[in-house]
Length: 209
Ligand code: ITT
Image (tube, rainbow, N blue to C red):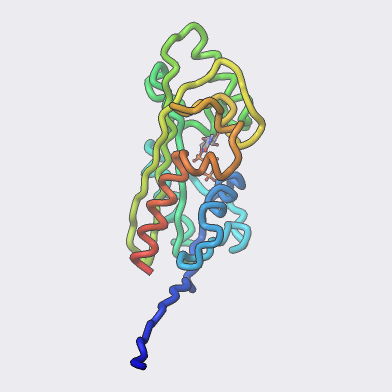
């Protein structure tokens, strides 16, 4: 009997990537997408590398902010790194809060304050269209790459749901009956801005280990 040699190549990544975020919800979402994938790098958090500094985020665009966060870690720690900058762009508010989504209601504000401000500004407006946009900046072996994701939806007049974070309780994605805060992590990741950006990052990493 002639033997057939079947060679199975199993690719297991030995690389590690740092995710430059102080937002534990983002870390959880990204880890959920990468869970069980052996061929992509393991993700380290800022806590894992002993970084407790406030990373500056002072640029005027999502792209530049994402770069600023990733570059901070590369410069200080010499580690391959990526960062995510996300904004909620509301049509009737000329794209606000956009790049100012985190501190829209002012320094020291929380998620609820930001939602309250948005709901107040949208009172009486019939156009409630909005888009979440995420830009991930990866700095790998000194090379910078960007991966973008977006999802269209509308801002509801009242909060619905308790999962997720940020503006999730008032964001209803197009063609869905549930807000992001009424979805579990997997459902949100399947259709969200961040889910799309991470999947693009994963494809790139698979081809560029
Ligand atoms: P890092 O910069 O440390 O990653 P951050 O919370 O400051 O954390 P961003 O500047 O990217 O991150 O996010 C701006 C804000 O947008 C964030 O604080 C939330 O209020 C909101 N946001 C981001 N992603 C969101 C999501 O998936 N769902 C709902 N709101 C989100």
